[in-house]
Length: 76
Image 1 (cartoon, one colour):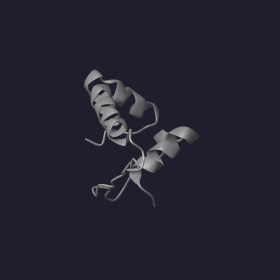
Image 2: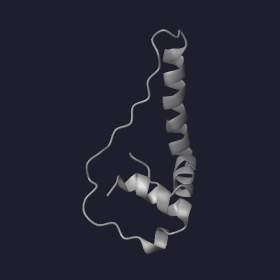
Image 3: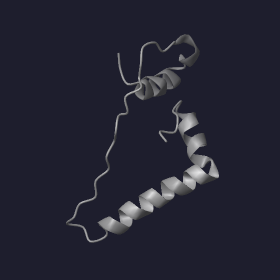
């Protein structure tokens, strides 16, 4: 038993993707938080750059391709 995202990645890494069947429910969202230290003056601009970068990757379709390479799906 594990998070579906972690299992999909592990299955892809091991080359056993086609041999697994996911059962049960993984409908609960698992949030991952990235923090930038308030002690670092550049933290606000780094956080904005990350958010903007993810938006741009999603809009271009590249995020989907990156996630797909790991057997993952977009969280949005």
